[in-house]
Length: 156
Image 1 (spheres, rainbow, N blue to C red):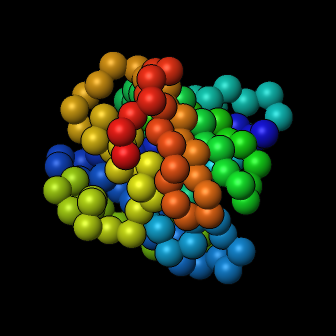
Image 2 (cartoon, rainbow, N blue to C red):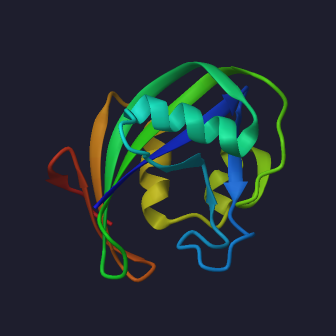
């Protein structure tokens, strides 16, 4: 099992996304995702998110919300507990990222991009400003086979 953080940084009606195109051995290869990564020893979810955002973007966040815990179960990878955040205030200058290309994307375009099917669920919940939630997403390969929101099975 691994713990990760993921943050969707907001600027007006846009999110800062990372198009994962630079690493060959990347389970998110060619996907568009928020900014984040794996916990280091002793980090809280907030510590990890703030560090990863700074390392990958050069931005220092000054306002954020812890929005959800998303559990990923896969027949190909270890179980992952992703701590999901949004942020709406930051300082610093955007820098290049060694994991992919950073781009500000209009939220209305998100579903047109190459994103995981389960990401569409939590992105919709973020857009609806849902209260803190727990989402379990189960995959067989790249195919979403189950989604459970706050302990209740969702129709796919």
